[in-house]
Image (cartoon, rainbow, N blue to C red; front, side, top):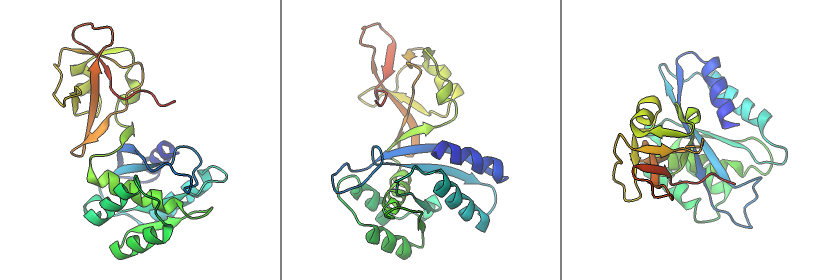
Length: 222
């Protein structure tokens, strides 16, 4: 749904560009109701002009109408530079502890951040606020939408990946950049992560042992 939302926002509002969408994994716990994996998505949008009031209603109406039956949708909207360390810490806590929607609502009010329940138990606001905090921190999650990543097929040269996608760096397991002439077997599925607020693809040597061949470190989610 987050990818659909991003597409509709860009077609509906002139001067808005989708820079990427990240998925953030939150705590899996028996006391937390969720429809799939208790993950939350964050859209990174660039605005040429000020955000209109219609933007807020457009986003909330879209999420409410497209959410799965029985889910607990919520929406959080904030400028990145207004997401404080406190909100970032809330996001980190949501990956380790069972939090309450009253805590999320209170924090959003204190920080003057738009946060709205859109049905169900209302607990979706916890994940919505957490995703914003984690994305703003710049070191969590993986991109499910980023320029060029869904066009990568088969074996691709490192330099071509860097030239044709939004991926900034391609690293080995130790964090070292791999050579531009090396190859990556994408297996038609590339989902870079965040490092210092930049899209980075982590890789490991191809299990075949072929020199100069790499595979994405993160495997496809089952």
